[in-house]
Length: 422
Image 1 (spheres, rainbow, N blue to C red):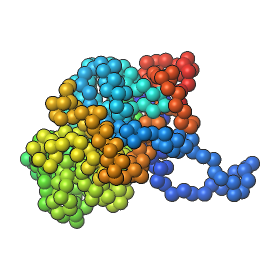
Image 2 (image 1 turned 180 degrees about the vertical axis):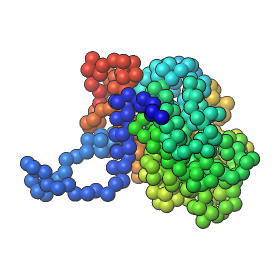
Image 3 (image 1 turned 30 degrees about the horizontal axis):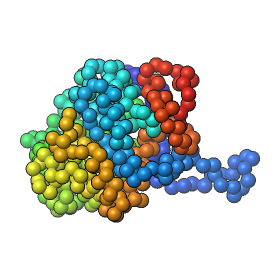
Image 4 (image 1 turned 45 degrees about the horizontal axis):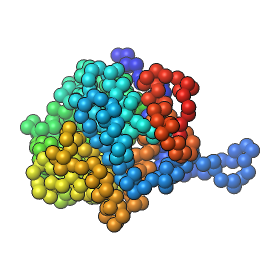
């Protein structure tokens, strides 16, 4: 079967650069052999991307730092309205839901291309595009997870290659689309969305899905550490399981390990409580973040599932969105996600108040600044790669607004026609 046409070359390069940059953040440094014309013992040339990150983070206020680790949903198809919210608070990302999709992927590209005011650091855009029952882009008619069970993993790779091409056509950088959960329970809420009935079968197709999306969009594995351990729905409850760590390693960990080994750059933590391992939902648990980092060796971006789901569980301990966000970042998540309604006040959410509260937590030590800076480095790496720009950080102000190479490409404008931005 012929693979579908991939993302435009320039956009595919953005994804490749982001993957390389993320890997480089923690990779072992291997001394370079002496280069012609360079003195032995002379320092290696500075990495422009690393220089940019260091300068950018050093120039950020506490409020800017914490706001850059927040991804939100703003309802509607008016990019100006969404951008106004993002710009007012400095949020780092936007997730598109069904109400943001006003037509085919090509139409959505007009929205995503207009969301970033700073060309050197565009916002991260994400979407849930699993296929089948969970698809925001309705022109995705490809095979869904349950359809892939009886088929060779190569078919899953082809299906996700086509799916990611559609997401890229919509101008979206991240697909929250690879379900790495597994369960034998036919009553489980998540079962129809899984990629296999056994850990081994799911692992094969999860890895294939990551391979299919590589070079086109940034893949996300969800819902760590495994929604299939409980039949309950985390949208309205805190699913709980009594399995121990050894059992988890032999079952629910397997597809996540395979997806990480295949190169997935993001993992989404779920609101799932494994009582024998941590007394907290994984999205708020330092124990689970440590397992993800140390046991599974994941070095990319960790994003929470929608934190408003914790409030809908009805558990009193999770009724405050500010407290949930502080706990999530303190636990080690890099991005906190809020799928907001039209009026955020109806769920007790005040964007400005959240940023202020997180900055206060940073000031008084409830949030560790070095850990927040590490999250910023991972998140800003993806955003900087999406800009297509190189070089040191230069605050060029409003004069550069609207000149992102990615935005120009979406609208078919030659970047050479506009002033370069940094």
